Length: 100
Image (tube, rainbow, N blue to C red; front, side, top):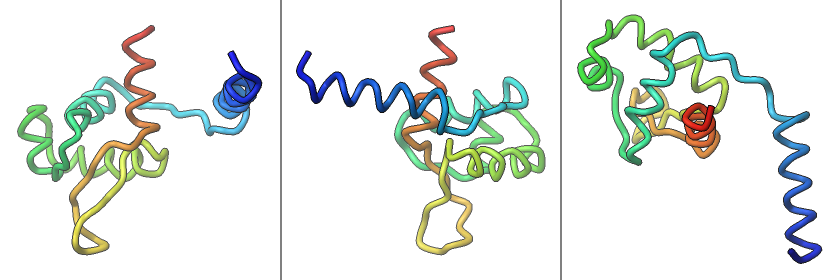
């Protein structure tokens, strides 16, 4: 490993241990939401609710929480659009869940 690679590794390690806020996902549904968005496609709450066979009202409470954690982000033509996609942090969180 080069010096730069070692430095990058140490910075990333420090970030994940001390800087990045601890993510507390409520239940399996949070991971299912991340999984539903992990294919790289964008989706809206109504479609995710159908795909997961969950109540849309419940998903509408979880999606803003996941967005606050930086796991997903709201995108779309309008600022208040209900179109979501997974973030890099969300994908890493999902990958970590599969490793455990």
